Image (cartoon, rainbow, N blue to C red):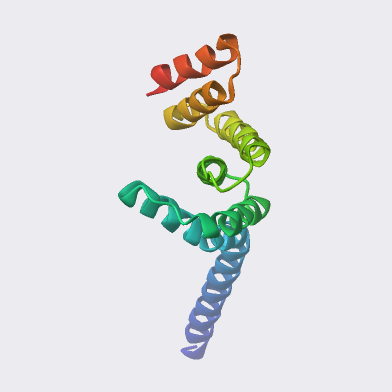
Length: 156
């Protein structure tokens, strides 16, 4: 009779270990895309942080960082990644070594990326301000600039 409780106890332990292992695998499989995207986005985040500290952008890396941000978005569609892409595109659009038409095209893409940010997370004042400032720089009509500018104030 003494061996039966030990066997039941052992069975319960193995069952608990099995349930814990299966749960861990399920959680890992669900979080894997986000983890991959976060790791892929690290150089982009580092470059943006460095820009905000020094106000200097390495224009030679911008195109590669933009590609990396797009790959991150393909892995996990999150507003933060769209915001980083928009900031990189604005920095690329300010590169005076590029022809005007190329800079304008990149700035138009920056507006579209910022619109993706506010579509996913509307309370992002920096994204709204980025939309308003870029549209103003590109010569959009005032009717297209003011609503984004108002939203940047209301959400900030």
